Length: 219
Image (cartoon, rainbow, N blue to C red; front, side, top):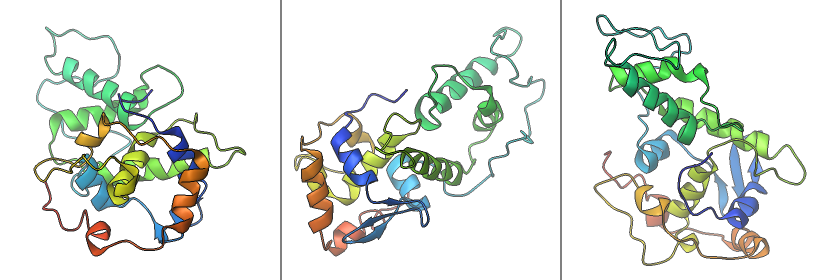
């Protein structure tokens, strides 16, 4: 399950060949690179700090608000339930993807937190989950791109730091997260070998390319 995006399978396959789970980095010729908490904030809009994600659901709930314990709810009884269920679907559909089409209840505490609070620091959890996805995908030989994971984030992250991997008419906005224009944009079509040669022969980046995220104001 993935959001509506133009998946570049050859690009992802080539990039994953450089993934090193020991250091959680892509060991490109230009140097080791990896998604960071700042990337999660600037590219995707996930807070890098704030209220920590609590797996046991130790969050303050609103008065008379029931726990989100079941997928059955009564909108008349609890007006908060529909929005929390939507958030749980969103987490399963776009952030913590799984092989099945089911909505996993393990994220219900997080859905409650996102509903009740605006300061949940989701960035560290999403980044850790992304590292786990990359590790799982690179365990198999050949690489397993069908493994569960938000690989759409990796593709967009690569396109942010390597403008050669996107069409030149795509401009990155200053007033919104960087992922938005790249989500539905077409991706240049190259073979796996061509992408591999790009990463192997790319030996330098300009200051503006290295600092594409650092130079932006936090949204």
